[in-house]
Structures are given as C-alpha cells and as structure tokens.
Image (tube, rainbow, N blue to C red; front, side, top):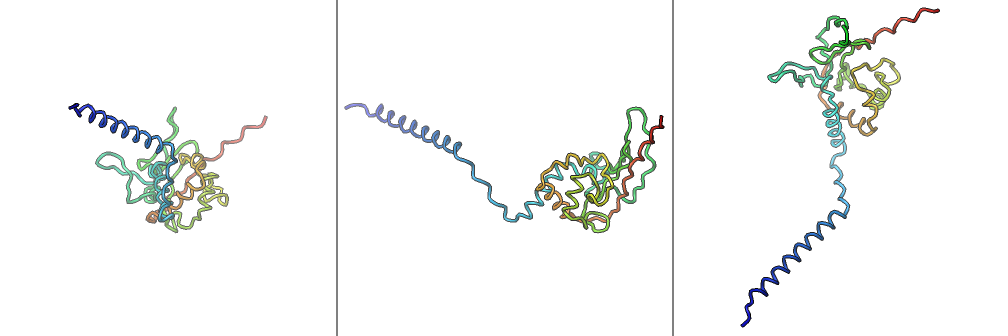
Length: 208
C-alpha cells in the first residue's frame, strides 16, 4: 500500500501557499484602495475649539501670555493666570540700558520685554469683557493677526515684538477662527495688563 504521508504533505503545503497568496492579495488591495474619510465630528463647535487648543499648544502662546513662576523643576507657567498676560500688579522698573550685543531684556515672568522697539507687555487673551478679549469679534481678532495692529485697523497701535504676528498672519482663516474660538472658551481672568510702549521715532537727520 502506498504511503499517504507525502500526499498529505503536498496538500498541506499547497494550502499554506494559497493562504499566503491570499493574504498578499488582500494586502495589495488594501493599499490600492483609498482610505476611508474620517467620520464627521459629532459636535463641530467642540472640534473647532479642540483645534484651537492644539494651535495654542504648538504655537507656544502660554510661553509669553501666561506669567511664569518658579516651581519644583524651575520656571513654569502659572496656570492660575493662564493666558491673562502681564500681571497688572507687577510694576516693572525701567528697563536696563542696552550694552554691547545685549540689546533687549525680559522680565522673570516672561510677560514683559524691552528692546529697540520699545517695551512690550503680553496682553490678556482671556474672554474677560473689561481687561481681555471678551468684547472682541472674530473679525477684529483676525484683522489684528493679519495686520499687526491691535484691534485691527481701527486702532493703529502696533503689536510689538516679540509677538510673532507675521508668522501667525500666515495661518489659514479656518485656523485663526479656531484659535479665536478656543481663546473665547477659556476661563475669563480680570487682569489689566499695561499697554505696550513703542520707542519714539529716531530724530530726523540734520538738513544739508
């Protein structure tokens, strides 16, 4: 009687090869097939605020608009003052005079800066109606970010360095809208940050 073992081995090997071929075919087909679009968010408004929170995080907004304090691991943002700007009760002394290549200086809170442009104080970005952005419209916010003028074209007060508004101005309309939506969602904090002080224009060159 012939030995059935080789025949069984051939069948098992053929079956295994067919399974491998089928798996490869499925893998190729799955790569060729377009990915399914993500499901629409259940709450578009919440998704917009979430996008704005992400932009604030990667944009480092807390680095200047949230006062720093000393913590167990060194300087860290004081999140009880999240995005409230330079503390109104922290009156800064005159900025040190520039010396050599050291031409600008900053406060320990990282919310006040002095340089050739003048003196900058980080603004209150929370939705407090008296001291923050609670009365701002989205259109005013977008114009300010696009033009570098506080409250848009109506005011004319410049947004001074180190606020990187030229980079923020390159954001899409959707991202600026999401940024504003998030800033309007954070807890309002009453904190009247000082107004920034632009440096006086240089004296005119003498005639002749």
